[in-house]
Length: 208
Image (tube, rainbow, N blue to C red):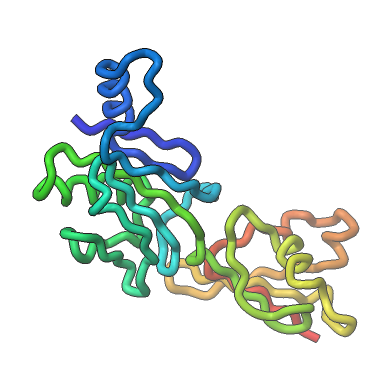
């Protein structure tokens, strides 16, 4: 039976079972890891609802099977390549779901594989800002971010920006949705519902 535990951004398949087994066999004063156990790298905090996407940097760690462990970048097609397992679909899954998938695939080659997936860097969750701002271009969403926070992050609005006519463009169910953002009102504490949380793929247009 595979048990799953999730601590921070580390998703461990069967880790609890491994720790229990080692503790039962080792002396109380022993702090050594099992022979061949892979060390777990530190991951980044994950935003709510995070799923793996292209360009994300992952560490796939197999306990007691260092030869199967690898640092990988998710390819544009959403897949990663692992020793023995070849191409594995990663995009669209949570880290714990991917850990379960690779553990199941590895069971064809090793006995009782224990796998974990750590997110080392998030590159797939991007928003875009165009127009009269300090710095145009893509911005990676590593946590929740509002329109006002995005504007501050890119250096604020330019002198001639239309502060009342900012637009957030979002794709929903294959259709384009446009939402207005009045910078002056939000700064004054009015109609704060305009200051929405951005979603990956959103584009903020600042006209002049």
